[in-house]
Image: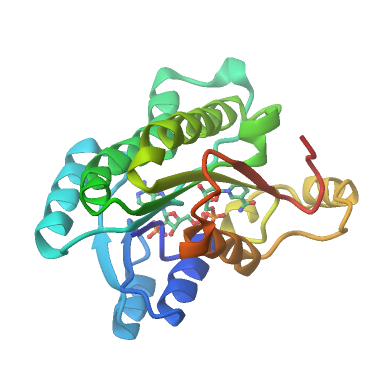
Length: 234
Ligand code: NDP
């Protein structure tokens, strides 16, 4: 199960797992044409707003009814939010938090019981390097993503005895739509500080997630893995 499977990192994840022979379910919201393409390929799409608890609840019930089990959950869908902290509103905070943190938490709670029953599971939460170190003018986003790091660590401890690993991937600047609206000058400035000298690719993030979901990654849990070209080294 991959959230935000229609574009960017999620699209690469859907492709990668599908090519590796998995039955792939994905959640999306607006990209209907892209979802239809993926469905033609054989993946199964569920349309819902991750930030809307009622929609999420009904989609999870549907999935649990239609599928025997969900073994791998990748909480990838997320939204950015740029602006001065003093100009943020409660409404914006609720939106950023609900998509980036509440939704992933809800999905973990929905699918963990079937992983526990099977004593096997993989959860990968996609946070951000800004969740690790904080970003100016992205306070809400950084806060929600830091919450996802906390969720991953605590859940890893609770679910380890049940054969379920929980890890958190923190991408740096990856070449996707999410960064299209960022001023080109800012991207260039950021790039100048990336030791490997380029943006990351969606395929590189998908490969890391695929690795974490592998049978042989069973001893890696509760880890916060940066994939940022050396921009942030913790
Ligand atoms: P994109 O903006 O390229 O794609 C976002 C995906 O999430 C789309 O498939 C979109 O679906 C889906 N989505 C967004 N909001 C919702 C929602 N409310 N309900 C359901 N689906 C939703 O994002 P990226 O691929 O760049 O980012 C993926 C993840 O990686 C995010 O969590 C992001 O925070 C994180 N990340 C990205 C970085 C980057 O530089 N790109 C850096 C660090 C972290 P649809 O189009 O169908 O609406």
